[in-house]
Image (cartoon, rainbow, N blue to C red):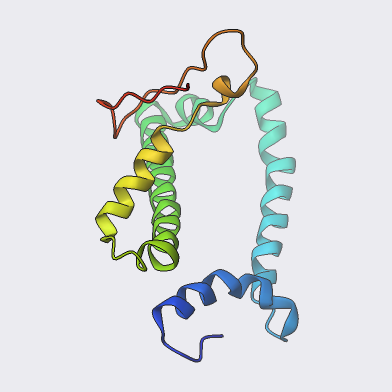
Length: 154
């Protein structure tokens, strides 16, 4: 590990920096990820894509349904949604943690307030459709965490 001190600020910065330090040492553990991606892409190109064209499929879920049945399709969909939710939660936690450590700790703002601020800022950002040029006012995507707030572009 690159961390010598166990200070909270340095420890988080260290984890964000470990991936870029790979070239400076003889430790090529990140290369295993690259090799895994190469094998994954080769498998998709040589196994899944020909299967999709042969069976006229549009997704792996339609293949699961035709090959193994309805409950296999539902189980695959559930695990996909679960993995995406957990991944988004970890990414959000990382962003909120960095904001808390480097900005909001100096102002003595509690962690749950940082989470609320970050969540509402993510909810109140315009959607991709709203970023396209239009003649009328810019619509915002539906708000989930701050539903009762009026987020408008003025």
